[in-house]
Image (cartoon, rainbow, N blue to C red; front, side, top):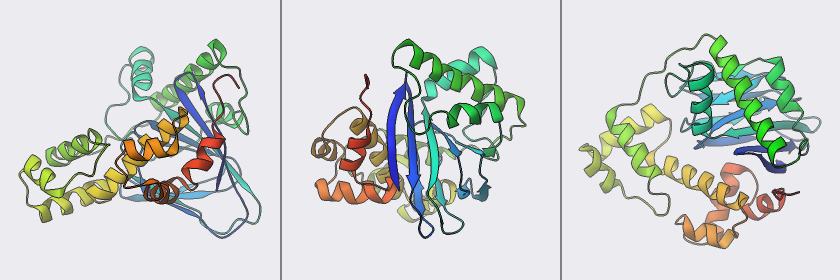
Amino acid sequence: MSITTTYSLGSTVIETYRYEPGPPGSIPPHHHDQWSLCLSLDFPGRIRHGGETHSVPVGSLLLVAPGEVHAEWDPYSRSTASHFTVVYLEPVDVAAAVAELDGGWPRTHAHGDPVFFDSRLAGRLGALYPRRPVAPGLEGDVAGVELISDLVGHRARSQVRASKPPTRAVALMRQYLADQPERNVRLDELATLTGLSKYHMVRTFRGEVGMTPHAYHVAGRVMRAKDELRRGRRVAEVALQFGFADQSHFTRHFGRIVGISPSVFSRRVTAPDG
């Protein structure tokens, strides 16, 4: 996998991907701080999300809420190169658009089937590949706002299924881990926080979230580190900031989750005035 570009439209981040021909690939369970919206341009996929497996047909859109654990993989080998566009939307921007344009969505943390079709929204995302289609500044800000408006408009028109909220213990653990991105949290801390035994706590967390507390925490730290690299920070500094033992330890986790090394990712970032 290769990220061909990563750039911003206002506060919205765009990443475009090219997968070379080869055997089926996969991305392990992970999560984002933002809403993620992906367009499959020319190759289908599969996703495990909310305890269910979904097909992602060519031309479909895939929406995952902040903090929702998901894993993706190819259904078969790629005979030609394939291409995807992913947009990361800040929760505060989505919430503001919902309040103004819809008044009710999002009602809960997750929203039923994450895969849907919308030709207007898909057209906007398709135009973002392979490079920045608009200039920075006001034009980019407007393009980012229009993306969010189209998304909120589609989901407001769709049938939305409320998800089961997390238990109090899992909600506490997720918030605690999110608040501690700079260090390795110990299991004893989470046990004290929740009042649960370590064994019951790990079972409960894995059952609701889909991964262990440690895996969830590492994935969150990697995604926060990715945001810092996008801002131009050096790899060694970011590795230290997010509590990785050394740069090689950080590179191993980053490559496993993102698909490329942090140094390669940094070189793919388009300068704000580029």
